[in-house]
Image: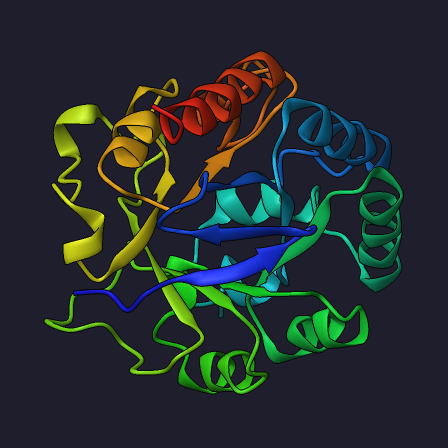
Length: 253
């Protein structure tokens, strides 16, 4: 059973008794363009999301010949979407100006230090990073609220017995077919506080809210037809707006 969840974001409380936290997972859907990233931030805020989240990693360490997951095609694509620290600083500035929280998944210590320098309010550990003990210990050691996706975790118990870790149910397929989901019937009786959703549409996320999920992370794009691995399983601004509206309405009925 998960521990009780309650924290504040942008002046409102997130808990089992309040509407769910909605994370617009922009990730790398900016396709390497700061202008597109800026518009994604703006549209995430207009849609009603609480957090605009990005992914920062060194393609060489992840997909390069000596990386954790060598993949020539993924490596080539990842090089086109790589952002540096000054880009991250600009994204944080735009989020602050829009009134939406900035967050990021980071995949190495250098980029974790970017988030420290930018003084993010909370952290995210991606499924691929859960077994990177040094990185996870550094992130969780900040004491800040940390969302942890467990898509690749195969252990019998949660990986970290620590107060500031909130776990997200996740199936690491892009897109994930509905038949491959095994959402908890009651999130409050599971280890999970929320759901990182890679399915098509918003129906699965709404089912999760109905079952007590207090955190929903959904990939976000301006156009599902854009090139890149995540656009197809992402919500458009219209879909994200409907997800936010219905998820918050469900908490009132």
